[in-house]
Image (cartoon, rainbow, N blue to C red; front, side, top):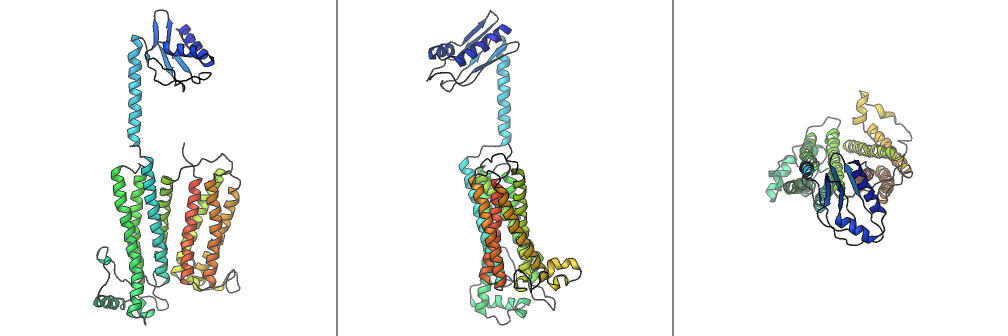
Length: 464
């Protein structure tokens, strides 16, 4: 038996080194190796030679235990399939083993789920990115609604009934009379007319209806893709999380508005709670980030990165910078909720001091971080400056790693956007928070977060 094994191996090696096309053809077509009378290995199906240039580029490898088996690999120049038939005693075990192997592969494929065609992945990714764009519109519209003091003009909330706006003069007057019963009219908009009320009411109505539109644009395609089998096993729980966050976002928006309909403290103005505003904005940013990451995973093809000792550190710094951008944007919600942008309108100092005197004016001290306008603005300045510094450091670190072109573009855009964002913030402060400039500054924070997510996604570690 050992002699038979050596004979097969020697014949295989000779085939590899052979430069005679006719000899290769004869060996492949005959395919017979005999050893005494005990075993016979025959190539049952003849192989048709397509083209041979100078040498065979693939090999037959043989293995032998008690019974001899012959394994074949394709020769690229030969176009056919080879079926090896063994002796009578050895044919059944080989067949059973092959069946078991095929059954195992089929079971693994069935466990992994159906294969999703590439075009379906592109469609799902485009749908998620489209929902991201709609979330951006909701954030911008919500910021303008807050800046124009329109958010408290609608004093009730109904999921279906609230979709119908007033049409007649009587309906508008009834809505205006209802608004007059709440603190914002009594202390802020005492002199407002019906036509002016209609404008702020329509701003809030547009924001709410846009949120409902996002829900419809998400739910119906999600159900369709789920039924079609276009959502992978990993994507299905993510879609459920996206839908839950959307529902939570709508409920949280009304919970925020309710805080501004209460009678304020004697020394305060009627406004929504800065805590609820930060939660509302933060949940919108979280939903946007998750959707954007999922959409990019479906649309963008992974580009491998050359090995570098700085690559693991770059990945950690990219995620850290992304988290810092998120926290800075969240601190901006506290600035907006307390109108902290209207105090100390100078930069870099605050009233000719690096640290203002009233930075710890509230007792207990920890409340200053969230309830003192001076402290909140000071914290936002520090976080903004730290974010720009972190982005610059990340950009310098990225120069040491041989990144693909798309990743290089992302980190360059992040550096440029961070510089633009801090410039917008300083101008917003110096010009006493004009509506248009403040809205652009808020949108800039979401843009910077998007680019940070893009860069982190480009250099992510993909399991082998």
